[in-house]
Length: 520
Image (cartoon, rainbow, N blue to C red; front, side, top):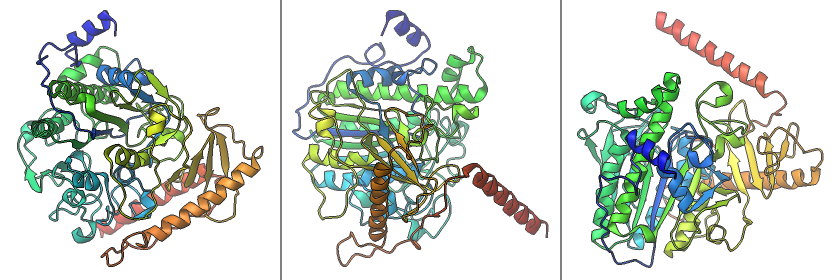
């Protein structure tokens, strides 16, 4: 970082670990565990191009940029789904969300029968904590969660999945003053923070990512004091709506002539970046940084794509949040693992949130207790430079009128279809590395590859359906699927725009019917 850049950031009041003069520079030596500490940090609705380390010169992210340079920029990293809840499920389970019925955001719940990273690491002696967004079902029996439903069916309490400590909301809150000025709405909100099962009403003002980090740091300090390895999930709400930047961060961007939405979007990301720097400094102070795997990514692409006049950047990739195209699932990501992952590198092998579980298990000496299908891959050899090719296909499935419903990424090819039959009308095949913008369909030039990927896609869907009915779980479990299996539409992709118009028309008609009922 150049001197003038550092001076500018400090003048703006941006915290940059390593150059801030407000913190202690004394490192506390700690015994090193043979098993690494693990931090999974995830943002909400941040586009691939919404960070400096991917070339954005408008959004100030000095701490993220510096950490990405200290480790590996995961250039082609994919969220498990183009929306929130399903991706979060893939992070903890290593399994596709269609195996247990989290079809989209605010639907389903994570079944207790799923074996998660915190389950395994808690058994291995780790301190385990989850901080920030939850969104995998209701975190408390007194609250059914966004989308309604019966609380007993929608319950998915964090402590069921191996967490010693949690501080969570069900879904998104404002990125600044989440419960109003002074926290005035904390006692009445229907989306509170829950800390270890208790509703929280205090210390909830200002930057929401700082509110989360205020709980993360004591957890890590306690683990370090006890010389215990820790597993920490940090799921920030930024930059998901409702987006609001604090005064300090708004001021940074107001002089650039940006509209208010961009000021808040950019400011919330810079505020988050400050908290990443704060965490980095604390890990160094405690002497645990050198034995920590620090993973960073977003849960899906931006909700407001710049192609649509919005403020989230996919760097020209097709699609956005809620679409399986690259812009909806290819997200900013990096991994820092001192002594294991070479600094300053860019890894272009496609990787996924599905890979977290098998990779962390390998690093911590954990294993899945049965033969249930794991869709992710142990990528330690990839991130440490021992090989460059992944072995497993990355599967995607999500229903949205403007995009395909099923996709596979295998090698250099990305395949899309709307059928789980032998039908192939409207299918698409792209050279992922040569055409990341996905505007040149090569399916006619590569029919054999498309046919093979179609066969694999159908086999994957059949496997997920088998899982959904509980056949992966040990005998005697109490699992019950939440409703029928979600079948594919099985209609061609030839007119997605017309289908989108029809869906909007149907939505408007439903709204009119509701209005007429209210009038009566």
